[in-house]
Image (cartoon, rainbow, N blue to C red; front, side):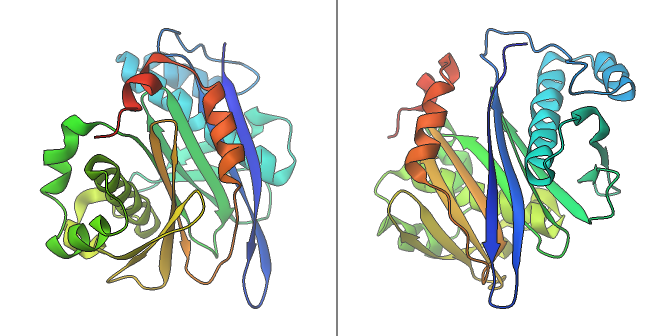
Length: 259
């Protein structure tokens, strides 16, 4: 199986304690058929995946679960990925099982040929979402945004496609923290402020001020991580850019056009 992957341990610094999280991105070329690696998946998982009838569903399952297992492995320094499993909760959310007494949770996203996951302590909720920039979705995404966030966002980001994708990605990541998904009115997820930094953006939320989002634009992909606002953490944008450049495929090239 021709996976490419990137893993990173993230340090979460708070005023009263320090915690760790594990981040992973995995990728397989759009012209490749993802196989079921027995070094990653256990028998039950392989049987479930083989029952999936749609190629897109199977690809998303493999991308998301592989990223989740790698993120957990990175955080816990565990090498046997088959012992790390993910089930579905009552709201459809992924539930992480590691066999460890440490209480960990996971957030998963997938987009085209990319899977992403972040594993974190249950006491410090986080969410991740990755989207490919696609200007053909501008009208659909714009219909779900408030006038205030579009006007304030336009003062920071000139590209409409990028701005809309940033807003969408940040909101979807927050909805995963809240465990509602995009089933609640979008205005409840309204973004209040966006600030540009060197290689990333930080957003705050009107109705959920206890959280903030960090968003990165990398090779046509926009991805956001939502975490408690008072938690400080850092990723090197240049390092992420270099790793994404290695994820070379047709979908990324099509997605790299920003209008």
